[in-house]
Amino acid sequence: MVDRYTKGALTAIALSLSIIAVQNAVGTSAAQQTPMKVQICDDLLHCVQLTPVAHDRYALPTFSTPAARLLQSK
Image (cartoon, one colour):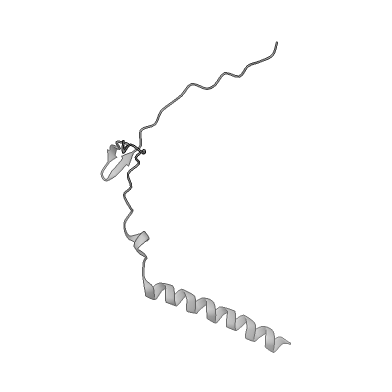
């Protein structure tokens, strides 16, 4: 009984270490190397203009709308 448990535990550890070794050997994926630049447009191809805020960083314009007033019964 103990022998089966030990073999199972050691097999799980060996598989985990093998997966970690393969992940390290493959290297970083394309998604981790550089961020993808996207553009936000509507159906008529009117696109959002981004505002530069720092070196290589941009901010989306934000809009503030007044809070809706709820009807209250008297």
